[in-house]
Amino acid sequence: FSFSHMLTQGREIWIETVGIHTYICRCRTTPTHMHKASKTLPAFISWLIDLVRTRMQVNVETLGHGSFLVNVLSDKSCPGLLVSILEAFDELGLSVLQATATCADTFRLEAIGGENLMENVDEHAVKQAVLRACSSHSGGGGNKQT
Image 1 (cartoon, rainbow, N blue to C red):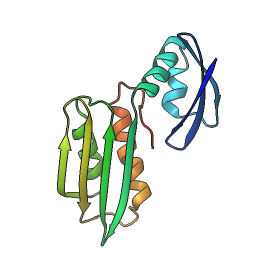
Image 2: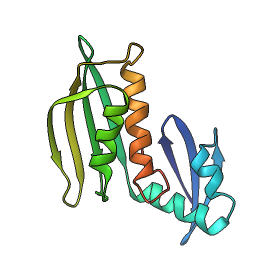
Image 3: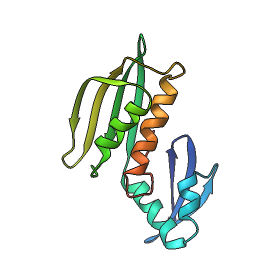
């Protein structure tokens, strides 16, 4: 038996591996996408395996005057991820002032978003919007880790 501990979007998950079989041992809170996937055991197991295989990091820093530095790193790239993240910026009323992206085998984005048009947008709101965007383009399973 081996146990691995994961933290995904603030949710703690313990996974027990017995040979090639993976079982969830404990989940402190259940994300919506995890609940939907758990309706069928194979989909749920597939979601867990994808979650373990793909690590995604999202970091957001406030630069001042409604500007944010957003860093997104992922072990693998998937089609539409960059567009989805840029749409999340747009929904928050943020303009991309400067960005560098790599979308080959891995995914990396460093962007400065500014000109915040919405009043209550903070670091946390930006991070949650980017995480939702990443979740929608990671095989439907929400492969993210913060």
